[in-house]
Structure formats: C-alpha cells, structure tokens
Image (cartoon, rainbow, N blue to C red; front, side):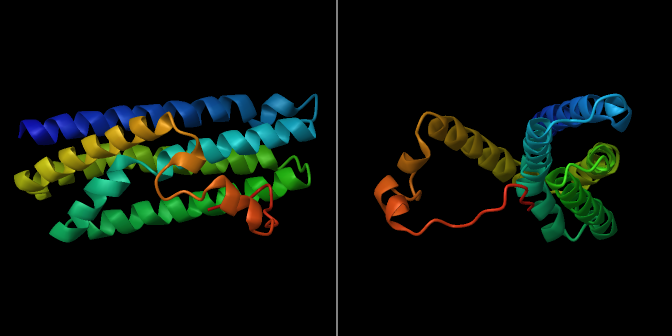
Length: 192
C-alpha cells in the first residue's frame, strides 16, 4: 500500500508540473494578448517550441509509460482509457493546427494552441480524478513494486544521460556517422 501511495504521489508531482507548463503557455499565448500587436515570426517559432515541450511533458509521462499499461493488463478502465486516448488525439490535431497556423503567421495560432492546452489539461484532470483511484484499486500490489522500480530506473537513466552529449548516449548515432549520412529535410513545425 505504501508503494502505491508513493508512486501516485510521484505521479501527482509530474502531473502538477505538466499542468503548470500548460497553464503558463495559455497565459502567454492567449488570443486576446495579441490583439494590439501581431506576433513576430520568431515569437511564433518560440511558441511552437514551447508548445512542443509542454505537449511532450504531457505525452511522455511515467503514468503513460508504467501505470496505464498495468491497468490495460488488469483489464480495468478500458472505457476511461479510450476517452483519455481520444483527448490526446484531439490535442495532437489541435497541435498540428497550431503549427500550421504558425507556419503562415495566422492569428488562429493562439486559439489552436489554447485548444491543445485545454484538451491536455482536461486529460490531466480526468486522470487525477478518475484514473488514479481506479489504478489504486485494480493494479495489484506486486505490480506497484515493479512500477516504482521502473520509475526509479527511468529517473536514474535520465539523470545519468543528462550529462552526456547526444552523440555519447548509448545507442545514439556517432557524430561521424551522422556527418556521413545525407541531410534530411525536416519541417520546422513537425508534430508527433
């Protein structure tokens, strides 16, 4: 029981961090904030980068990596998980709309960004209100030990690999092999 409580507290902290990032992004890019002066191309670029980071903070969470698969294995909360997945897909579409609007400096960018953030905030809120209690009930206690162990291993890996350049991370391409490969055309406003 203590392991599940510890794990859910750690997940709640991660949720709070993601929520704060989304809320600050909405405040900064609320459509009404740009009524008098249009954003510059650089501001659109920075906003797209901030949206990508906020989206990634919601998309690559430990909850999705470890708890949701345990719930799926337990056969619990299938309807709720489908609804949460639908919110994520809608957020992906809104993010694509925001990036497309930013690419042409369209004022609809702020509305698409706000829609994306609000969908992700709704998902976070439903996870805390509905998914966490179901996880506490349906995920067996031995699975909580495995989840906590995976979370600690994941944290250790992230801390360990922060100090290395990308070329030195195990499994990463070396600089020489990256230089030898032909350059790829990568659109600046890419989505997941």
